Length: 362
Image 1 (cartoon, rainbow, N blue to C red):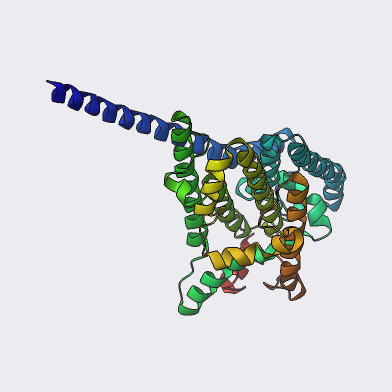
Image 2 (cartoon, one colour):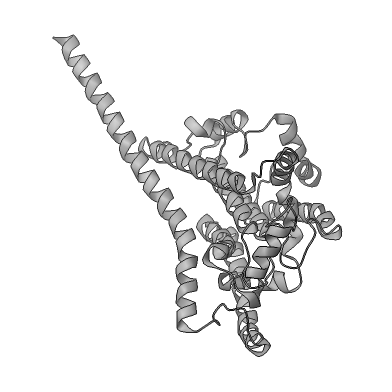
């Protein structure tokens, strides 16, 4: 009799766990899809509304220079105001220790990337109305200062190009999908950990990354950045790419993760310190590579990781400077070659008859 009751209790417990997991998986899926849909669909809707309201000129092959300049006089100050607001939002998040403010700032900064999916306009050289935030970078040609970010894309794309296959778009889509999947799995694990009332989540995907959701976002946004850089441009505009906004938003996310680590080390010190020894910070990479990546921090701070917000800001500045310096060869060597309206959209294939035909049709 006792064994039957024990078996029944065990069966009920297992069913309860299964129901909980299914519910949390569904919740995580809804959360992830909603977030992704919003960031992709919102720019498209806003662009349509702005166009219909007459706030921006219609996309057509002939636009009077006076109209362009008139629009830019309005857009330019708005761009600087938007950029300033986002920077203030991010800084305020770090000062007030409210990570949501800084996270929101990172997302808003990267949001204009989706302008490529909402359409592009001649007078903004393909930047799109939602890229108004980037005007301060675009007008003085700073958008390419993050081009070192393309290196992981350049190597496989060029190697495949040598033997024939064009993997540019498939690679960008695959990276986006992988990032989405990692984010989803991280969200499920986090939800399940909170249901179990764990202060520190250490199981499943968290065994391989202390911040799997941020890791998923970084990989997902990298794929989006590639897709944006590969987008065709209407009516003779140019595509400067989206490397700098992606680089800045990624560094912000990394700094937010570092700030969380400081808080977790205080709230759940013993458990979290042991967890840090077992699991990598974000990317599950070999220790010798991780050691090379963190070398600037050890030189600057004489420690493996920043331990206060002032040191986190210094970390951001150092790595931003490093990536900008590494991006300079791309600009100085004009790589990929800028042929009027194409750049990353056609590399490594290069301009040819097909692109000339597309250009004439536009």
